Image 1: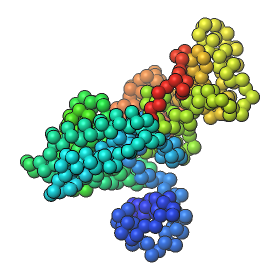
Image 2 (image 1 turned 60 degrees about the horizontal axis):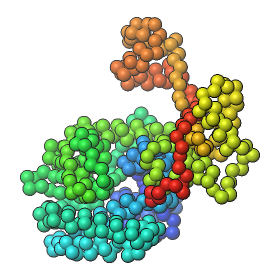
Image 3 (image 1 turned 90 degrees about the vertical axis):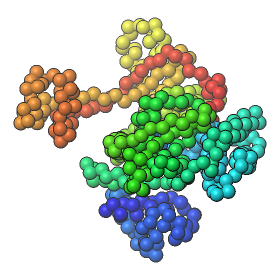
Image 4 (image 1 turned 180 degrees about the horizontal axis):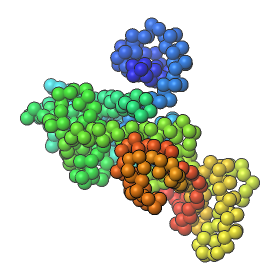
Length: 458
């Protein structure tokens, strides 16, 4: 079944690449088994049609960066990974791509390594020679170009390529995740910037970063992405055990390298984290549940901001020709609602009426926030649990735990849940706890700048 899932996954990605003709060798690179069935294309199509709805719904091929996007903002994940809406990359992301390419060139040309001038020349040839839709003005383009050259010169001086034994550049890997609970097999894929063999016979994984902020050593020690890289390398080359493998983040702007070691437990932790996130995504998708936006400072760097339910009302409100299809005067309703909140008036009945209208507008227009001159109103889905203590008693009494919450105290139960065996916890969640969701509105009297007043982040 695992092989069948992999074949169908690979066939799925081939089908998405419509109009692209792949050779047998290219297909074998995509999956080492798929080329065996290339002469059976009709069979694969039939198999894909009949079984993919069952298997692909429970199996997922993803990356750690995609899962990280979900934890930061489920709505962005949906736009990017499910809806696959094309998005303009940020200046920082595009800049990082050019710098990575030059560093790859620097170490790849062994044994006749390029000079620092040739390395910077590679960067110059590939970097845009004039302003474009990413680097909009000559001043912006030149600032990023000069920064790239500065980084490469500093890196070359500190890291002459002939001093390193590089085993791999942009090394791809896959980790198979077995979800026994849901009888599913997932594939977690990634790409490692560089793998070195050190003089003492140990190995080092290096991930380049062009970010400005330098994290704490504690953050590096607990970085799940580095744990995944270590796990991926160990799956690919089993002799690279945790004891002789180091993981490092190299911050190019500061020429600082932060290193850490990983234990076998860290690999299992990243697998559990990934499985939990994948399970949550699958549950949302299968149940047709919303992928709620999570507004934060990262929104200013998100290419989907004008489309996001948390922001699109602000963009629509500032548009010359608003596209609201609703006859509701939402601007007037929002203004009155915020005014009542600001003055802290005890007009509960009118507030309830306004809330109902605002919720109606949000539901119909597909937005989670509406903006007024005095602030904005957010919609969120909140969850409340109710406990069926008759069922809980049936589960806990046989194992001698009912007396621990004899007063049927919810606080005691929540504390006890942490100590129970996993099988008992799952029974309680399934039979003893009822969960319901409801829509809540939250008011902020913080004034939000219009899109025209905010400096472009892209």
